[in-house]
Length: 424
Image 1: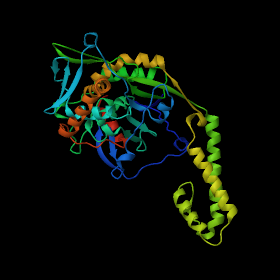
Image 2: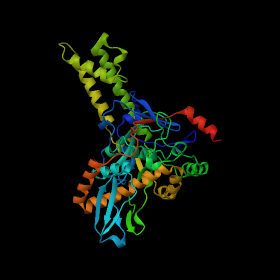
Image 3: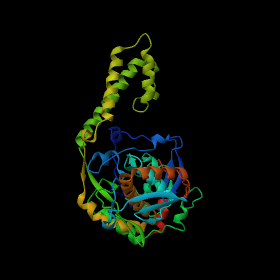
Image 4: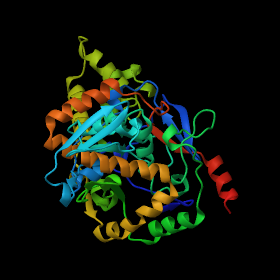
């Protein structure tokens, strides 16, 4: 665990050798909003498919931690003992969820801005809610990917923030809009975030002094979600948790692969200069302008005179670069290990997190619990489920501000140091 100016750095690796050797940065971004000292960015020209993730992943699969990470919910709720023989029926009337269990009808307090994304999430076959790929601390190089159901809505924004748990100086706050007003749904108002120094210190010290970890996933694996109903109303129990993992890196193997990659670039550069002669410029350096160089060489192939040996050598080197870029974590030398004891020791901190940022963690808890319940209904009463989701998507009216979920984020150090001075 690395420490940087009182915020914790969470390592995230992604499939492919380029993510260890090379760093690519997107430039077509504009500042969208902020979370106190964190600027959020939305890539204005990115297509929807470039911003979503459609993946089914399981915690026991270590590839999940290296390639996906983030948030994943896959549990199915079960009825309490007194409801095991009761039928469950869903309806949507006047923009409200209706749950009928046996002969009793309930109107749970689930606003549409949470209901719609959750039911559409459950209506898909994918369980990954959110993923961060790339270097996710103090830069705009991270890729924030959302399940389609949580893309560009307030619930997606709340869930995104739960993945920043390691950055305790940021976690307590909420995003603001261009006028620097907190982005809140009517069901969340009035609310003003407050940084509780005692809770902050408790969570921070646990993260710093506990077993070192590399990454984590917010999950509901093996959580026993139960729904119940009585005179007091409809109830859901069970909470998600953070699952921590450790990473071990074979540095010798990574160094060897790095040297191999550099040799490939040198080969491409050497033979490109032979092929292009005086046409070769610094703008065609394969280390920085590979696409331009490949396009130029492709045009050269159609000319009458070219050097077949050099062209073959370029192709061979490019093929090796491509192979290196598609290596698995195991081939690179990355191994992941579950930090079971630390995961268990952190579970009791959930209530502190919920006090530290009530809106974020209430939304997370609601998403996990209702996801599990809706999975149960979809499984036990598929015909009713089909009718229900059609009503939700046809008749529902949004009751939250329109937002763009971020594609990346960046620490604003001016505000960061201002905040530190204020809280001394």
